[in-house]
Length: 271
Image (cartoon, rainbow, N blue to C red; front, top):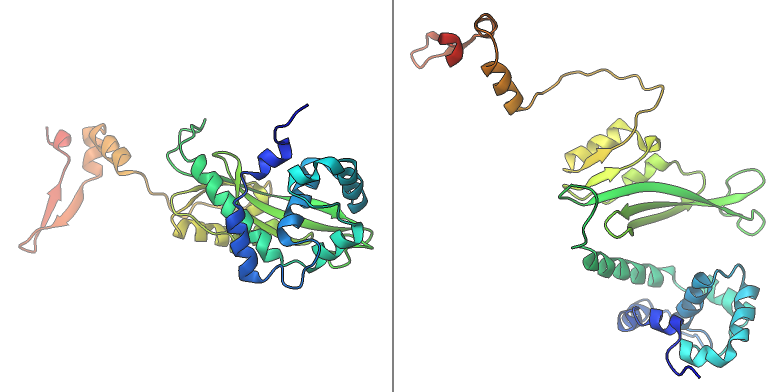
């Protein structure tokens, strides 16, 4: 007979329960709650996510089938479907948002020294969105098409460890490029995105914040280069390797201290 901890209980040990308790007290999440507190609701929903449950009835039936293991899972009893429904409607979402941000912070510290395939000494993010289809009769607040509802989840993924650093949930009609207005910009970081985020005004804000971006151009893009600045090393190399005739053509006039003009010619051209 196995007397060790269940796999679910071992996973739950990584959750900072003291931090969750402080967050619940901060928002008053358990005020007036009698049967299913915020911590128990988190356990139930984590179990449903890890076991791929598809409905409240499915969660109830699966927990009832493992009634003898509920104590080892940290649960007192099997919550009814109505209790789960009321808890999901009434619990403050900010509690679980704060817990998720705390877990993300801890996970990024653990993966900070992990080696990457990219030879870049900076943080690299991948930005994209996914559309989650919903039933229009149940989710009237998230219209998407005439026959269905949907929400869109915009995710900024840290490629070191594949950890989400930013998540924004909107209705399905929100364009991807608008999330750039909400994105926290990290100076020196690289942001990789597809052509759906191509907006020169918003990308220029990333440039002003000291970040870098990599994207693809649209097929119907109409742009022209206004000016080009070559690196100093490339300019010096071209000046050294230039012929005497070319160097004399690139002669520049520099005002001297006495007010007269003097010519500055590359040393190779003088010889």
